[in-house]
Length: 223
Image 1 (cartoon, rainbow, N blue to C red):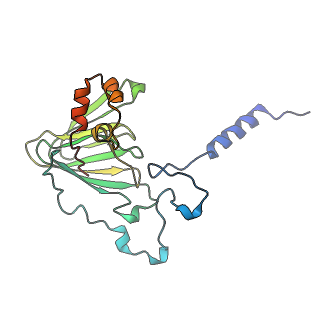
Image 2: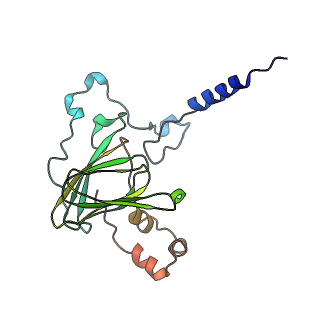
Image 3: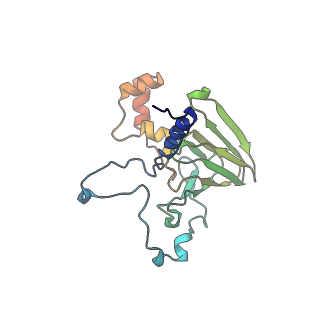
């Protein structure tokens, strides 16, 4: 009996691994169903007939005016994701405009499906991200000035704070047509139905009164 060379076996295994690939998810959940009458949703959006597409499909005008920062966070994020900008479908990119009043904050959040690159157009921002426990939850932070660019790796918690005395403006590019958004405080303390206080008191090592107080707050969404 002849045996295949070990190099051939390694190559075959590597090739099989390379082709064992699932496309990245473009929404939070997509439950499989065998009942086609119960609704069908693809990983992303259905495509318009290319013959019916027009230049308007590839134009987004939502960044022309400043966002309203008159809110508890003092910031407004205007997104150009696929839901607002259909021309992005299947292209793997999106953008956002970030407006900040003096002291305005884009609170700690994460994009589960996209890396973010941010450029400051006006003002001064304190930005940062926190690594996973693989790197002991290390904080990487910098003060950014007009023209500076900073990148936030996919899935990591990050934030932007206007530390100047004037209005600040930034634009962000993201590596997904639908990068998703999880604002940490909103998700943990504003979940519906609420996360059990027993879970949160143990997780944060605080008294139940603190958890009750935080869960009773209105968690503003600046998007």
